[in-house]
Length: 291
Image (tube, rainbow, N blue to C red; front, side):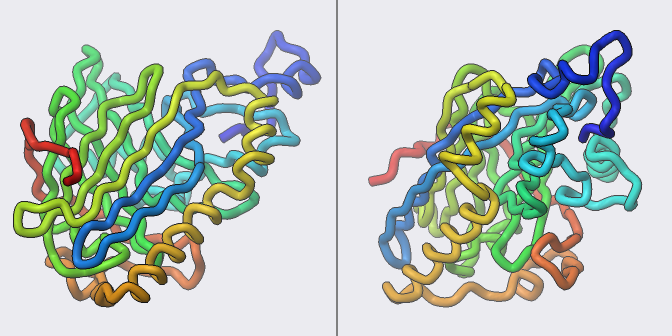
């Protein structure tokens, strides 16, 4: 995140009108959730995500900084002074992956007016030769739990994750996730589906088109999608309430339903939690089309 200093050789007033960090992009998105089992329900909402290079985070004009703060504390686990890149590197190292001289790009929602909520954050991790070594997928539940999973490179195909189904905020009945997360280019096209008994019980999608990250566009998004993290959380809570009314069972407590270590929870909505890995493998050839 910006430290408030301007780059030598540039006039500080010029920084008011532009966003530094040329690798950053915005994706206004349409997020959909289709629940097929144990009850049927469909919902969608508008949101947006940033695609950023963790070594070149966007540096916004001072007046816009409250609307896009990239805080390491909102992702993975680490020390209070760690950068987000350091947290990703530490997570990779715990899973036997090292990126000396490599780069990490991330798709996430920043803090907006102090509020943070990321149902899904993605980190694409490349070595110094530009080879994708893995994708870190971090999921956050309505109770504030965050868990991260290291997915193998799959050339755009889905990867399966076991031990993750307790993260599903609507019905904790076991199962596994399939995650298809190609790094966005001109378009964003992510899919996460929850499977039970070889059937997709829930399919979530994120779709959008790349936009240049400009100050005007950031401001415009605050008008068209105000308080995006809060709106995403409220949308999920509304879905959970609707599913209850339709007869879906209440989700089990993820801390007890998961086979992994129990996560720590802090006493506020931006809880610090344990990030754990889970077995994952390529699942090419899987059909994503709901019937």
